[in-house]
Length: 375
Length: 254
Image (cartoon, rainbow over all chains, first blue to last red; front, side, top):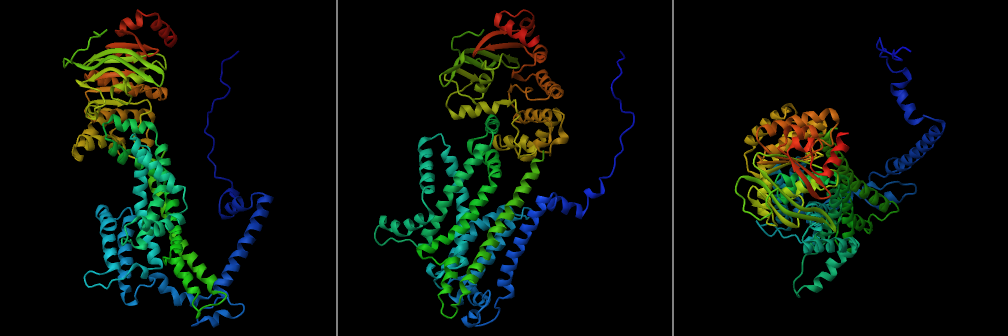
């Protein structure tokens, strides 16, 4: 028997272009939408359904819609679609609430300052991150507080019941978001603490808050809380709602962060310890950056949930965006069959823009962080 | 074996382990361990899996807590005193089986983090030191990459450099080549051999018997949570005294 191998390559096989029907737009469309008869049927059926939905909403919101008018009559005609003049008439109130018209410039400054300090913070390449963070997290809230409440520098006092609309929704959600992440991190660390008292307190807080609906927390904050206070001591209703929302979301955030902490391998802790890093430095430089990265989707989910949940403050009589929009429905000038639909539709759009932005930004951040760990 | 009486450190000993016992729950994992390591000495610890060798060296920088006995590292006794633990960890570097590099930091940042935050070395200087040690482990060109972009052998060499950046007096190696593909083992062993030649005090848990033969001053054989034999490499491999050592060597050397 000879010992020759079965096969020896003497010439390289040719490198050929992909077959024609594998590349190009048509090939892509066919592969994605019509790869088999069943898929083709599903594509056509779902496509038709999509068209129907878009057409129905589009006709109501654009084609049959009423665009001009000064009262309910234009919107009450049979076959009328969305009642946009109502939105136009009410829009400023949605944005500013009952804030005195002459003082609205103060709210404008708050909005502009907020955008000017927040946006560069969100853009990774923007410079002066530390000062930017100081401006947004420390200086901005103080300015906002004095500007909105007034009573200093000759500013007219504006009580919080006069605040409302988007202003209140943003104050509640931004405060909640900014507070809940650090509080959640501390609670999550507390839950893993070696010190029993800290661990038990953290667990008790998290489990109590998670076991209770937000509405209950808000009712408790506004109705029960004053009962435990000495007579005469009363906190602002908006402040109570703020604290309630922030604590509530902190408990959820804690569990989210805990999930991330558990996903960080034990070896990371050991490596950090063996290098002599203290507990807080290990957490700050090694564990948290990895843990938070893992749970970004969950954290953003919480932020989005929190943003929408602020609408529950309606039940304790705070005029947030939802309550403000609904308040317009009772206005006799605009009562028409389409007023409510249009109001809710606009409301949904506003909420959607904010939530969708958060979601997209989170995806962007995830992509950026991931680029560092190319495998 | 070292005298079992409790003696004060005489300054020449890098590590003193006296009558150390440890339990995981009811399970007695370290039984009356006695071992002293002089400065500059290279010790290889071997033994079957589950014999307690990893647990032993993890006790030396307090990643594990021993319940009875004394461990004195560079004159500092390991107790619940946090300052002592910090002092010991500053002096003792550790290299792990699974490298445990920080995946979210670049190779350079992995090497400079602890010097900057623990030893308060200025950033510039820490980076220079890091580059010096990365050059020494022959991967200075990877400094700005992330650990995930490197091969296993390269990652382990970074891990060694990371430890060296803290200028440790003692290096612990916990099966540093066990997670590596065969073709990468040599590059890591070469770095370790170089360290040994430079006089580093080393304690290595390893199955690399060639390394033990070539580098070790003493070989410690553990089985069932006890030290069974401590011997010079030459004697250990040619004339092991304990039958258990003989049985183990027969199994791994075929």
